Amino acid sequence: MSRAGFIRLLVVAAAIFALEVACRAGVIDAITIIPPSAMAAGAWNLLVSGRYTQDILLTLGSVGLAVVLAIVGGFGLGYVLFRLPRLRRALDPLLASYYAVPTFVFYPLFIVLFGLNRLPLVAIGFVFAVIAMAINTLTGFERVPPVLRRTAKALRLSEPATLVGITMPACAPYLLTGAKLVIAYSFIGVIAGEFVLSGAGVGHQIAFAYNNFDNPNMYGLMLLLIGFVSALNMVLFAWERRFYRRRGLT
Image (tube, rainbow, N blue to C red; front, side):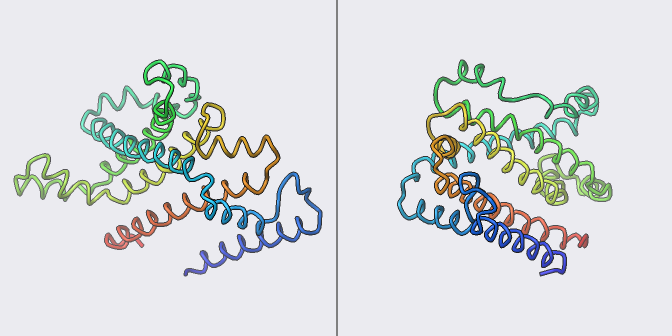
């Protein structure tokens, strides 16, 4: 572990310890927040009891579908924008202001299009995440060294062969960064949608526990969610650093 990583870990551990002491000493009201140890105990009890297994699977299924659609759609959009510079210049203002648009206003439209099921939540996660993948894909394509493209032309490779064999491996770190953002944004879109727009799922159960002052379940579900997303992003981060090392950038 690097020195910076050790310092970050030490800061996080100190913050958790301080929160634990403050909660146990009564400095922080138990109605507001519970000790981290109680959160961990609540998360463990949820896993052992299997009470929310169905909700967890529903949320992960919705997020997984949103992630796949956003990665595929964002990659395709980024590739099209790279191949059509005029279209990119026309869409640049829209891309720059995209996240200023509240995507949840489209939920009634998604209900009309997809019905009263999980697909509107998937659509919200997709809409929230797809542009992040498109922008990173476009950035990655622009950062491919020109010598690699000239080599592909010298070898008379077809466009699909160049894309798969040269362009994508060269911009893989940017694609992985886009995938990390897609995962985060998809979780945000789906969970936030479940808070107010769904009768099932992790977001709904967190909101239900909050309204009933059920802090162990609420913070337990939140801890499980944070842990899962963090672990997934750590795997992608390790894979990303591996690509950077192969290119001599770290």
